[in-house]
Image 1 (spheres, one colour):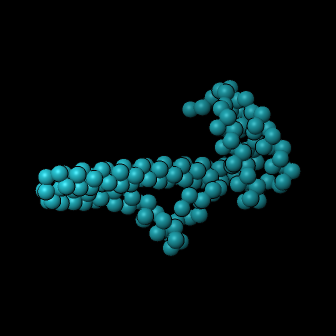
Image 2: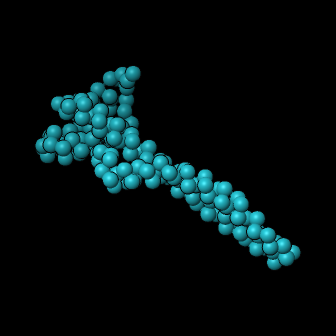
Length: 153
């Protein structure tokens, strides 16, 4: 459990400012209130200071915003992981094909052995990206609620 006297980081101040921007967009704050609260958020030293900037915003909306933010961060991390996996797959496949060509030219052995690891690894890449494709499809069909703040799909 957090303690009101704990110090906050710059990242937590940035998150509070994004939440205030979304709360203003949702109509919970006026532009003048937003300006004052964002200044207070960037000047916050403790958790109690950050809690004060969210005063009068419905707690259920703040919890919903926080869940959406965490879900968006998770999706961004999954996308980065899938991109790295795909890049490694393409680099590894290219290397295996190069080795196959070099061996084929040098010895005349042209059995297409890279085909098997490339297909197997390809299944892994396909299944690694499957949840991302399903989430994107649900988003396009309107099956998921719109993300608060920045869109990630």
